[in-house]
Length: 311
Image 1: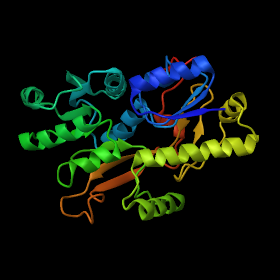
Image 2 (image 1 turned 135 degrees about the vertical axis):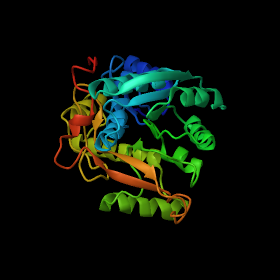
Image 3 (image 1 turned 90 degrees about the vertical axis):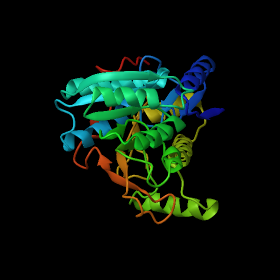
Image 4 (image 1 turned 180 degrees about the vertical axis):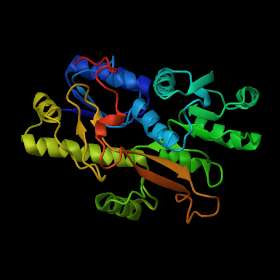
């Protein structure tokens, strides 16, 4: 039984999901974050390991609420002009609406844009309280660098940033609060052991995609060992029992039976003050796990009422 594992781009992941469904093959989708993939486009044969857009927005949102940066505040967003960005904007709008934040401007950004000065001038004119990035990949780091050059006084936060892109920004070039599914400084014994072995072999710490591929293979191995089978239907049934998995975090994770999303802890991270980093991978400070230890993991995920998935 072949198992498909991979993908990061939401548009490509959707195509692979359709192929997996047509051929009745298991697809462990590890990196694409669009809510639509586990929503209206969900299917029986696809399981989603990474945190979706709604979770990223709610994770950063909890930090903003804690700092009184939402109610009656004016937000300006910059959004990637494709399925992922549109989806992220919709999640952000739901969060603003639920918490009395005001979206005063949004600009759709084509994927080939490298000069953000026209958009930064619009932000300066709009005078928001907070600027939000709904971008992806190297556009995020390009925006952050140019934002710093413009010396705008408005705090910037983002609802999507991968570890490798954060590292690419470099010490002193990253600002704001961002979501992550995992970071190598996480103080959990199993995570520290993984980081130590990975770093010894590769000469650098793992980023979030290295972690997610590792735990995905671990979950597949557990499923095959427990079911003593590689049969697709038996593996799906095992995951749909909401079996608990050790994903190198303080709390175990499980796939929801009704949308196949892995429910797990998430985190925020922010840059340390310039000059505090011990090396080029050490300039980011990881925040506390979200939700808190006494809160249900489900609370940062979309509800059945919000998610149109039908398996």
